[in-house]
Length: 367
Ligand SMILES: Cc1ncc(COP(=O)(O)O)c(C=O)c1O
Image 1 (spheres, protein in one colour):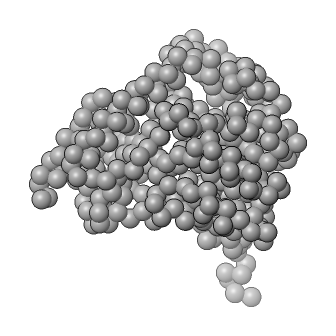
Image 2: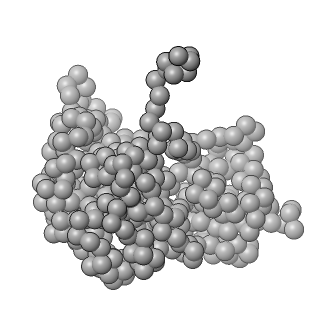
């Protein structure tokens, strides 16, 4: 027997996964002064959450509420949904993994956008299922192209709406067409991590559009507009019979007590979410306009970030390096096979001003 055959071996599908590279990476020589790389909220959490921390009195030696019942109750009342249609997770990523584990395995296909959120393919492969990508040649999702890729093996469709990193959006009518044409045994997972930032009037959340559908799960997160990314809290809405499988396999205490408590406070402060929306809308439009004035093509975005075209992979790398060595970190998207694009998150006023100043300087210097 050879030495290597004595070692534990991971499943072969797991070894095909490229590790996720987040926006927290700071390459050598770069400075992390302004971070516009992870679509986090520049406004931070509601002041009511910060108030809770100033008077912190949770009993940390007790286990958290296993079903996150107070949090689910709060979400149910704010979104006017029924509590038994909700599940919470350690970030919405946790719930994506639970869905893939419960509903797909070896021999099954999980359909997702060519440039969709990377965690979908990681979750598919983790469970031995095959990720299948429907093409997005125009950098947005087209329902016809998606439907063409549904096969007898398709078990789940994962769709980020708005999409990350593209920023694109499917309308209410697109979603209705998609749902009508999807076989009823296929689970449609609508990932609405950026829903709070959408201004388009043709957008509708799965929370209302598919509130009684048996084959739709709508995902939401406290990581973006709520400014609680560090807490890791996500939630999903779906039929109780469908969520039942997720409850069976989730960790019994998958949301920590500090997170549950903070999110319960945060969801009641919808005034804060309105502020986050307004800040984002104003700064997203301003930044897009300035980038376009500099000659960059910018993808229309309904999220808290913009994807812009740098024309060549070399120029994209140059921009990343130029900004990074001057203290402004933005996000390369080559992990999505978008080699000549970069993504910038919408930050605070002075952060966006500095980003644009550096982009102007780059363009002037490299002409
Ligand atoms: C489309 C999309 N879904 C889900 C997430 C992850 O959210 P969470 O922090 O709740 O795991 C992200 C984070 O970047 C995202 O872009």
